Image (tube, rainbow over all chains, first blue to last red):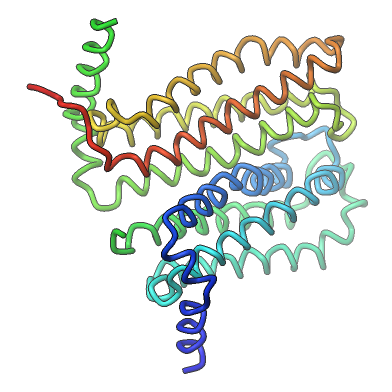
Length: 166
Length: 171
């Protein structure tokens, strides 16, 4: 299958080999991956809580989005790059775990949630921005996002626990 | 000092042998389950600290001032610290005696104590007095971020040093 050979190819690249065989690469990259949660996950949760009217109520939603967006995209980039790097260390092994597949599915769903929001309520944000309460759709988006990202984190932890110890 | 060390070790033994220490250690899924809460609170705490300290540094958030922003975020910040302390304590209890001799753990706990004290005193004071000189506000922001980053780095490190030889424990 194409996927299988792609996984083996990634495993055999010099990049994958370095990650796998270097003593320092894995701990350093994983540390960056985990600590960047402190920006990415933190800002995602804050945005979701804002959509649920639970925090920063006096700041318009659009202002919260505008101010957090560059940080969200920047830290998401770091998460993706470090995540792919860790994956490259042993793609076949990672892909073989149920939690990895689940995590990718949840990531996809979380991304879809963002896209749907941007194309619907996100477009009219300026209209409901100043209302005392956010519309129901925005609250559903916030709850979905919270659930999906918590699932992503949980699956990420799960991966570490089903892998055989190094 | 020797007495303090003995007391600390006794406390670690008690945690190690407590029912929750046993329960989490013996369960296949309780440890990762508690860890998820630790990580989620880490994420939110990090986000809140970045926001408050950026505001302290001069990057305005919305139309609010730093004290206003901090007032809104503080309940969540202390909630996160509470969740992290509780979940961290539970995780610690599964290998408390091992952690006693782990230099990364000692480093993390020392910085944690500093970070919490700093957050409750100097940091809080600087946030709530908007007339503090710009230089001091920035310094306070950088110190806060560095302290908490140190706690996080210590947390990452302790997992990698765990396998190092523990000191003789005695009976």
